[in-house]
Image (cartoon, rainbow, N blue to C red; front, side):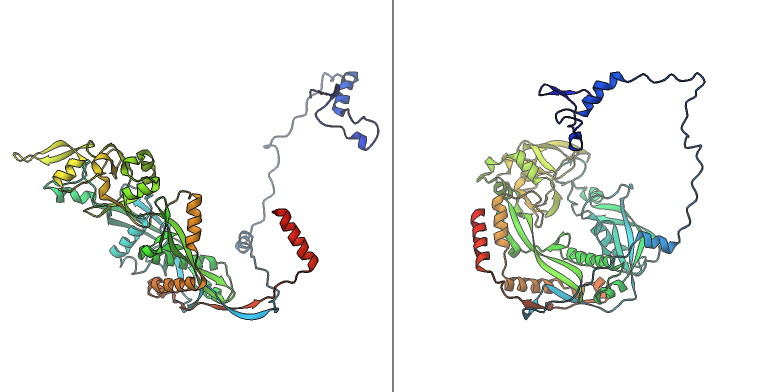
Length: 520
């Protein structure tokens, strides 16, 4: 390597450490420089003989094959792939302090049936043209329709569906691989015909309405695994097996499905009802929504249902204009920044009046409601052939639909259509539906407001949890009934101890006060 010049002396990249072991090299000189300075004094290497041949390294093909490995028995392979792990046993329990009975937010679970098995099926949802279904929330609607359409083919069994790729039944379905065709009514069936108009008032409405109201799905259910329910019984005894976590996951999915049928917003194992008394305004068009977390837990005393208070952020429901005014902190629609509004509204769901149909927002119109034109097909009175006319969105709703618009004319329209086939609605006819999660980061003021308004005293929290358990009506869930699971209505009590306050000496107290003063 090239030597470096430092302090007028020639040195290498590394410092010399030989002087630490012997005095043969100075501290400020590098042995790289020593070697480089004496490299010219070495004699040249001897010449090679004329008949010398270089030695070639053996290639991989010339090497002998490795010895065969001994066969591994299936039992040994299972032990290698799944090592058994056991929790360290607790050495004992403390005895100091005054005994006391504590109330916990756990509810004891009892189980009657233990001989059955959960059968796990892989769910593959496709459209009629074999495209995969990627929309959220569609799977539950398809599976519910599947159970209604093919009860005998599915042996009249109830499902526990996680909303994605897994479905569970108690007992097996008649076949290992099942394929079904499901026709689902489109919830946003107020969509318009191919001309892109915001409404369809043609006399031939019944003929063109059907293709836009139904969608055809292909459902494939393939057997994946079998989970014994006896694993839950072992958890009730405080014992854990290799299937315990899988079995508890299944009954947690049953809880999610039960809350979904009640119209709750699902956030993992937390559920939020559409109850205005649970909403707290955080400002900026954001609200905190109180809900509850519910999941089964394996404890030392057996299996229990853990319920706790949970909070998430949602978009303030109501008129779209009111949300934009609060979100941008302005007092008049004329002050709204529509570029920011477009980003804030994208993918939010709305209901339009007077049809009360639900859509998802894809954007805003490029022009205001007065100037945004589209082609409307109407029948000609003479020969009955349809004739396309250009009309503005404002004129269509006011003149053709007879709907009074007070302030939408000067503002962009809400677009709920597709990129090549937009569908426009005046903004004052659109309302944000409840229980839509707000996923953007909160401001410091919003965070502090959320913490302040989410506080609950113990007695208030106990009252809320008792009310949640009653309103959830888990005893009416058919899957839990089929499992033989029942949940106690009272809080679980456990034994605790009140310890005495620690005694601090005078010197320790002075040390604590002095350290605290230094920290300040």
